[in-house]
Amino acid sequence: MTSVVRKQCVVQAYSVLWVLALTGALVVGCKARTSDKPSPATTTPSVAEESPAPEGLPEPEQAPDKAKETPGGPEQTPGETKEAPSKTKEAPSKTAETPGEVKQPLGETKETPTETKETPSETKETPGKTKEPPTGTKESPGEATPGEKAAAEKKFDPTGVPTVQWLPKPVEVPNSEAKQEADMKPYAEKVPATDVTFEMVPIRGGKFTMGSPDGEAKRKDDEGPRHEVVIEPFWVGKYEVTWDEYELWGLGLDQQRRNILGVKSTEIDVLADAVAQPTKPYSDMTFGMGKSGYPAICMTQLAARMYCKWLSAKTGRFYRLPTEAEWEYACRAGTTTAYNFGDDPAKLSEYAWYFDNSDDKYHKVGQKKPNPWGLYDMHGNVSEWVLDQYIPDYYKQLAGKATLRPLAVPTTEYSRAARGGCWDDDAELLRSAARLASSMDWKKQDPQIPKSIWYNTESNCPGFRVVRPLHVPDVEEAKLYEPDYKAVKEYQEAQAGKQ
Image 1 (cartoon, helix red, strand yellow):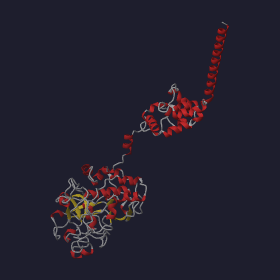
Image 2 (tube, rainbow, N blue to C red):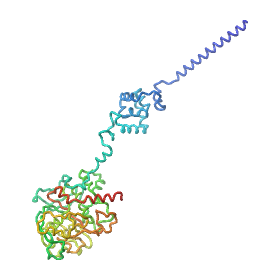
Image 3 (cartoon, rainbow, N blue to C red):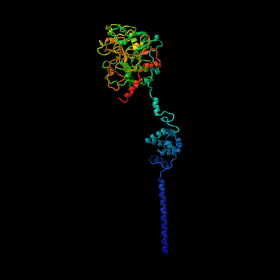
Image 4 (cartoon, rainbow, N blue to C red):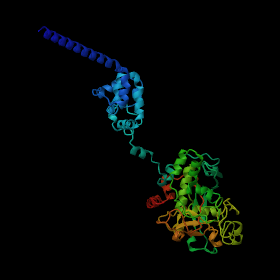
């Protein structure tokens, strides 16, 4: 019995010892694990960088307040805390909890551009959600939308508006201004920001007899009856317009020069650039006869008028084509003979290039003798556009009275009037009273559909020269000198999309 009791006590003693040993081991193990666990201070960055944020982040409305307490936070991530907390959950919570570590979450935002790009776009699309919208917000209330900005920035189109309504302040040129006829002087106009210069000669106003007498050799019926015309003072080009002048506009060389040289456009440049320009010619419009210093040719009357509009924009002075009456008045220069040097065509070679002496081509301007008023090539070299519609019996409407500023305002494309005769014409077509009518044949081989409004492909003439009236006309009168804006718009629409 005693041995049994002893055995039971031994067993119980071992049980107690085993329990104690096990409990001790557990305690030691727990202490060991507890001592190996890192401190909370080192956990923060690892959680932000590698692990998804735990449940229980601060509510979105709490994050901005804490972000505002962090220097530089809102400025570097505008609208991020308010509008996109779900996209970067770690940054707001850690910004709120550890202000000293704000730079690290911002750095992470920079490394995740997809989130950064989305955040500002949300701010732009929902301006009402932020009190301080970015200055670049395009669709914010009170600011122009992209469509409105495009409309606001659309260039003014001077092509269809009378020149006198937008004529800029004149560029200063010596002797170019006069308040009355007695003050008018010759001057040289240099096209601004170019090396191109042309000369203008003052023409006094007066009265003359227009047309040719019945007994003049080679006279045609459309040159009469003779009638009196009153002319107001104006300046006129000393020479025909050369390619050097014309291609500044006609080929856009003025714009190309600025682009190549990196020259900033002035307000006047921008205005002039907006004037309609010709389409590119599909062949050499000089026909190999020469360019620099030679008269420009092959343009339509509309193109010549548009050049004058461009020139007005560039200089601030009102230039246009002469009327048929102004041209003859300037050509005659006070004479009443067939030519401005007399009636004998044998002397024509001293004053003009024409069929007998031109060698089948035009020549540089100003190579022959001038007329009594100092104007060159009024006879021959190239014929010259005037403003008028060609009407064969127009002079009959003017007979028996002195007419001030007569002008047959064009109403149809054909025919338009030209004057002076050409290098390819016989002597009688160079007479002061001789008239020339444009023809559809001048564009016969033009391959374009519709045919060009800018070029005459079958006529090696005419060219033109410019005039400038002493007194700038009012709007109603100025409309008579304007290019046909409707024809320009219709042609541009027909050419849309073509190369």
